[in-house]
Length: 125
Image (tube, rainbow, N blue to C red; front, side, top):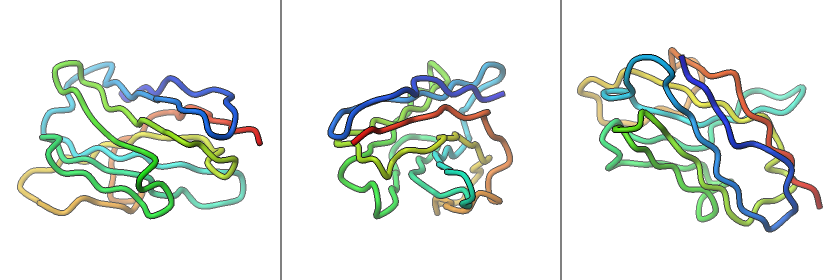
């Protein structure tokens, strides 16, 4: 089970770090992704990280502002969000996919098998 935390209300230009922890089991061998969703829109890819943490990929809309990282010893994945903008307002979800031997990080929601319940991030202007 994945549990996100750390969301909240911030002002434009602020920073925020959200976390995703596996409450049972381990995240080792799992590719992890962050997605976000606003009402009436499809879930949008934000960032992904390989199970080792050595490979990351961010969407163009957050590149240079958001950083994904992980601590496998703590079964936790993080999303550091800097220079937040009102358009970053959304519910943020973490997701897990068993990586096995594949090298390509996945960016589509239906490519991930396990999801958290989401944490809300609101950025005021």
